[in-house]
Every structure is written in structure tokens, then in C-alpha cells.
Image (tube, rainbow, N blue to C red; front, side, top):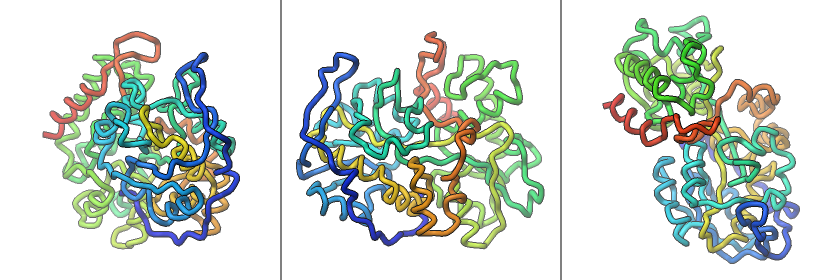
Length: 386
């Protein structure tokens, strides 16, 4: 869904990433139990993944090196991933490439279990933020290993906006009625909450994913107003690209992939920006099913896709950004200029402007139970888009 183009792979399995000792499980004395040593692969690995995350380009070398035959079930949404992972994967699935809006649902339902970062050699090369992001790490316990990420940028027509918009207010401006698009998913509510956190500080919004009833109501009211400006909501990157190229819309939230593809197509002049309020963003995580039958293959896979070369290949294939800082050089070798294009060389301060998706839950960060949970987000979004 975030694909740019197929990249020819010269990579073989990286020995350092796949060299792990015999299997064992922790006692769980200091927290939930997890594997402390991984051994020889069981021969099979069953994954739930975003479409294309198990491309043959890197799967075949992995299987050749480990003997782990990869089977996949592509999911079309985070909600579908959560549904498929019920009962800890049911013994049917070993891992899921969950996005931040699904992670906490999977963690608190008990469907995934902690992962041992010591078994992922390249973990030490990750951007600091992605070693323990709030969406997959709780009290220092890692319920998965970060993979790739991307910001939700403001995409706009440079013909319509010769001067770059500096605020998300543009997508709520009545002057743009009928020319706006937005991502058709409940997590989009966070975009409006982020904007209100800056434009209406009296609401007291500190985290766009932790909203009290008054804050939530104000956010929904803004989105109901925006509904009158929306030409059409987009569900896939291709949908939004078509909307811009047809001239139906001129502004809206997007992933970097859409910008890159539109510029490559050359049919319309576009650019993107991260406005003054900052932006939301998504980060994907490989998470281990509680009832995984092939944990050794799961760890071998996670170590492999965490290496710089495989991270770079996947990033270019999809138009997303690797978490491994050493992937930048690999990207440049494959496609000059891609490192900066995908923000893979972003300094740590860059992440201060990105509010990554995480599942809204009733328990606020301060421990109170005053926040609106995701089920209410979903119900509200259905009403907004009806």
C-alpha cells in the first residue's frame, strides 16, 4: 500500500543478525516472560503483515539462510490485524507488523508478549526514539521491535498555494471548501486534536491521543465542520494520488509516499510540509504473538529485517523510513538522495515535532480514567464520515 517500486536485492542473510544461541525462556521474575535465547528455526514462520512487507526480494534470502519458510496473511487495516491476532494469534500466527494505533490494543488484550532486544544485534543502531516509543514499550518492557515509520505531512498543490501553508488551519478553512481530503480512519481524530492543542490552548490538550470528554467533544465538533469542506476521504495512498491528479482536491494530510509519487508522475505540482503545530505519524512494529508456535524463526526474522541493508531495501520499496540509523548509507547506495527525501537522516530533535500514533485508551497518562477510548473514537468517526 505504500509501495514505490521494486528494488533488486543483492543482499544475503547477514550472519551477525542471525547468529543467536540455543532457545530458552525467562522466569518472568522482573516482568512478563520472554525468550532469553533463540535457537535453530522451526522451519516455518506465519506472519500478519501490511501488503508487501514480506516481499520475495528479502524473504527468499532469509529462508535460504535460516530454513524458515515465510507464510503471510496481508491485512488491510489495523483493526483487521487486531482481529486476526485475537487469542494470542491462536497458534496460527507468529507475528504481526502492527502500527501504533493497534499496538496497545494488542498489548493490553494479552495477544502479544515481550520481546528481548538483546537478541536483535542492530537494535543498538536504532534511532533513540524508536528503541522505546510509547506505542510499543510500557514501563521499559518492549512488546515488539520497531521497523519503519513516516510522518503524516500536509500535502498541497503549489499552484493553489504558491506560498507553503504554515498551519493545519488550511484543512479547516472554509475558503478551501470542496478541495480538502483526509485519511478515512478513526486515528485521524488525533490530527484535529493536535491542531486544537496549539490553536485553542485553553482546552488543555497535552497528548492528541489522550482526550478527556470536553477535549474530545471539541475535536469532534471541528471535524464535523471540516466534513463540509471534504471532497472525499482517502483510504489508500493510491486514492489520494488520484484525487490530486484529477484536480478534485488541492490539500490534505498524506504520507511522504504520496508526495514522492505525485512528483514522479509529474501530472500536478505538489509539495508537502510539517506545519507549525507539528504532525502525527505512524510507526510499525513487529510483535510476537503470545501463542506463537515458531518463536525462533520469529526472532531470526526480526533480527534480519532490523539490519541496515534490509531496512533500506524495504524503505525504498514502500516509501517509508527505516529506524536503523545505518540504513541511510545503504539507501544512498541504492538511490542517491533518498536518505534526506525520506527523513532517514533526521536529527533526534525532529521527532519532537511528530506525535506518533498510539491506541487511545481510557487510562490517561496521569493514571486517571478520564480519557476517551478507541471504541468511542471509532463510533465518532463513523458519524463524522456518514
